[in-house]
Image (cartoon, rainbow, N blue to C red):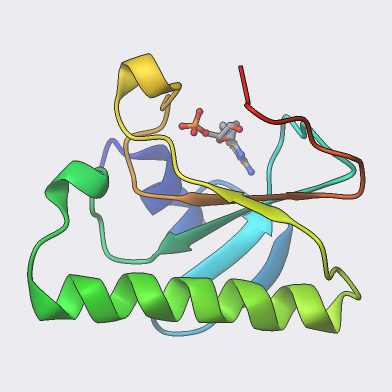
Length: 113
Ligand code: DGP
């Protein structure tokens, strides 16, 4: 999508500090980190939110995104982390391209705000 921030990161029109990338997935550092380690993992294909997931291909893709997060975290020596997906404006979603936050490097409170 031409007006999507994260699609522009995928297309290298906006720079990002990339942690991992392959044909399906990109993982990069969040520009407004809420923890010492704060990454965003996205499917390269534009999916707006969890509400827009449908079918076996999306199910497999989201599982693949989580697997790649785990592998990247292990490579970085990050073992305890929280994964967050905000879905919709009231949840805190501000970029409408499905993304999984990885937060780590400090004790994280529960429940989140
Ligand atoms: P959310 O609020 O769940 O939609 O998370 C969006 C995140 O995206 C937020 O933590 C800040 C981050 N972000 C916004 N703009 C940029 C950007 O241009 N580059 C990077 N790397 N992250 C961004």
